[in-house]
Amino acid sequence: MCMKPDQSRPCWQCGLALLVSGWLLSPLVAHAQAVPLAERLQLCAGCHNPDGNSSIPENPNLSGLDADYIVRQLQDFKSGSRKSPVMSGIIPMIDDKEFPALAEFFSKQKPKPGAKADAKLAAQGKEIYDEGIVGSAVPACSGCHNEDGSGTEKYPRIAGQHSSYVIQQLINFKSGERANDVKAVMRAVAKRMNEKEIRAVAEYVVTLKGAQE
Amino acid sequence: MIKIRLLLLTLLLAPLTAVFADVADAVKSPKGYGSKGYVWGKLLPEQVTVLKLTGDPVRGKEAFRGCRGCHKADAAGVTDGTYPRLTGQHARVVIKQVTEVRAGIRVNPKMEPFSADHAVSPQEIADIAVFLATAETTRENGKGDGDAVAKGKKLYEQGRCRNCHGTYGEGDADGPYPVIAAQHYGYLKREMEYIKKGIRGNSHPDMVRAIRNYSHEDIDAMADYLSRLPDYRQSLAERKGK
Image: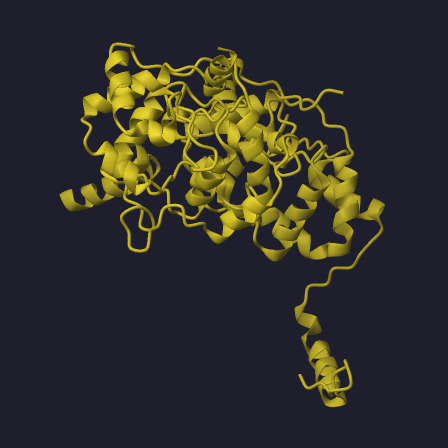
């Protein structure tokens, strides 16, 4: 683009070209129009419930998650770096500007205790969660996600999350289908786990309560 | 048909061999010891950066979260030696090891993803290093069976080991040479064997030359002895008290 030496703006020909191309390309860009928070929440509530504690085990609980983590996931759904057949249909409707308020709302919702777990399977999961699997170099989950599953700024809360959802995510990390973990840390862990171990850990995660106030 | 089965078996086992590569048959580092241009002690650009930063042990404890899945919350590792004990390790040693694992000089597939630059930033490496240097544990380390302690002591003291690693296995904070006293027996033995084979990527050439003269039994005896030494901070305090 040509700039006159004494000006920070492009010359009028370039300006016109930009305007025209913008107008021509506009129908190709999905129309995301910001709507008021209350209205937008109705859309989310359809799958995640109004308080972010979803009744459908395949859909994750969002209550109590770190707001930055939620924003990052929404951005990744939008850019396609996190794939989800459901969210890929929903996300084009939401304007990026809405992400922080939505994330803030769900992060402040009170998490409900997880469903009743299979005690025997959960006990096997606890062993992996707290100690890791030394033989196959699986680190203890508690290292990053905390003993109570409350997570940190870097690593999300997982306490009380639906086991079906946790299993699916770990399988997706293992296969590489989910690849929006920064520097492949979670993929590295999941690749070292077999499906039996994944199921056990997921069952234990359901029982975690997170930080107790 | 047999060929297809073999191929399938190889494909199935491939991920396993990748994970356990450093356990069963460790590979020589393409950038490390023995490769062209490897110079021990030549600082990597990232090491220069980290060494200029001031570490904070409180922040370090927080940043250590990403490490404690394997090295445990008290940083004392696993007693069978799969993961080393890091309590009291010199800050510069920690900085050297973390940065050289992530630079691929010390090949460590188990640790590599967790030492990547998202998991720990240069500032966090500096913080973790000072945290570990002062960290203490009440847990016992993994020890050898004790049969070869006398032999191990003799080999350690008559060899040139003490020149760098000290009388008490205290290493050298500036060398930097690692603390090896009270390390897990299994870890000491494994790493000595790696150095002997020339496959611990960031070995000091003098260390490789020195350890070549020792048999597997000798290495076992030294590991036994070193694992039975007390925490070097205790040894140094006792010497001071005398």
